[in-house]
Length: 466
Image (tube, rainbow, N blue to C red; front, top):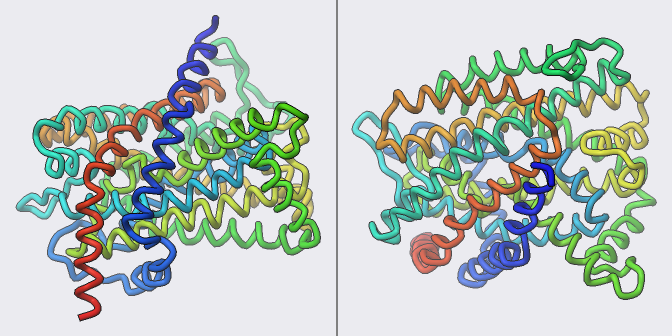
């Protein structure tokens, strides 16, 4: 049995039925206790984004900056490569389960970001530290500190070994190779394998870019995110809307195919339940990978917001799940289904690239360039966001030891540099495992503190009425 086989078995266990049920159950619990707040208060949440109120005494970045930092980490390869991987493995029905996970996950994201602001720690110099580790420790009590430390260990590991570095740089370098050197005509032999020069050059450029930004800390990451995130999201959505507009007659059929696939209706007799479970598993796993609702990562960014209202920041932060999954992932998924890209035998970014080439009324080279540009920006900002998350987890574990944090920062940059030389399938599997394990302590805390979330929410909206 190979290392990859072992990793796949661990991944299947971690992302088995118990965790899927737990994620959905927490989403249902919070949706019920908050009376469907993610739907009834969504308009107010978007209104708060554009108000951009920085009147809070505490915090390091604006509420909008905190949202963009969280979005910089969530809008990544999951939106392009992850959606494609889910649909190829689980069929079009995987997209339906992404929607379900996102709808429930919006309430989860609201709750965890509210708690992050409520229980955050602010130093005398204005330096902020907050996230699941503090709402577990302060909200649930000192006897649960071990659970807070477990989350922090898994969070630092997820950033360094999984979702933050290797998967993202792989996405960037693969996109560069597919565009500049698809036939691998210009290669160099390293570590016993041949690598395209496009991979090497793209890897070096991104590593330098990451180093220049992350060394500046949260304020620099936030400033870069505020510029890049809105630009890249609009560019990608416009391209996807053009594809859907050019194939508008195929959209109803694609929606039917997605719904049928979600419940195994297209499977052969007797295989419906199995097909449904695969679609559910892949859809929810990739959906969580993409929007990170329930993982506990976004609250770390939310805690840094200049806002004295935990509820208001929770509302602003929950829009991230809507933007990431219900808008951007849906666009990707529909483009893949209506163009038949998921049945081509291609993998990862190649699937979405095929959809763009077939769907956009542009030369194939131009379509590929647009996708490559989006993927590079998406993945680059995810690398930045997850460095911040990992650093904050380590800061909690070491009681604020900045020397250790600086060492982590340089190791993180090194992980970005070596990422292109690691195998993609194993990398995605490791990222999935870390994601699943990281979610467990956070979900336990959300259940335990759901009463606090409901009480804070009721108090806030009662105050607004008065």
